[in-house]
Length: 198
Image 1: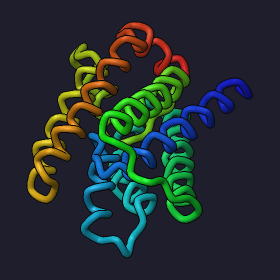
Image 2 (image 1 turned 180 degrees about the horizontal axis):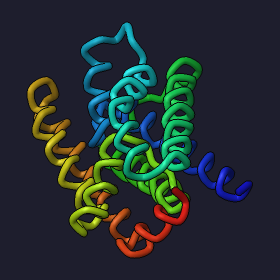
Image 3 (image 1 turned 180 degrees about the vertical axis):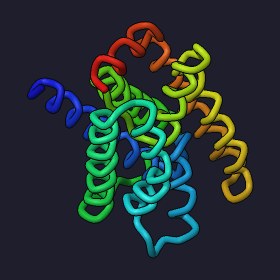
């Protein structure tokens, strides 16, 4: 149990650092993270962490009904920790916008590795991750593929308010995250871990 908590905290910190670098580079992620970044850019009076928590709230019921109370509690904890960490980084540190290639590589790897640790230990960053796990159990669709498909949809929506070049770079980040998740998370292993930890 202690080992799982430590791994989840590590995963949260990795993902939060990746999100912060992504935001500093002026790019978007997919899923609820991307939505939170997008809305924050329009309503700067509210922090990323607040929007990230609010957007994830509706998905908690699905997590509770389908994936169990333990999974929901772990996910709630992880969403809260990531939200607070990103906001603290925003308030306390300034990162000169890195070049796009560096933003893509660093944020993509950090977010993917963080999500891998969470998903392998019966938790997630909520939202699309919960939906992807639900679809995997119901239909057999690979979790990484479902997350990637949803992320691409977010990229298309972001064209409304983000420059096309920024969306293109963001899409590269999303693809990198999807590829890394697909490499590190085999469907059978993920399903077994999630069910046994729920």
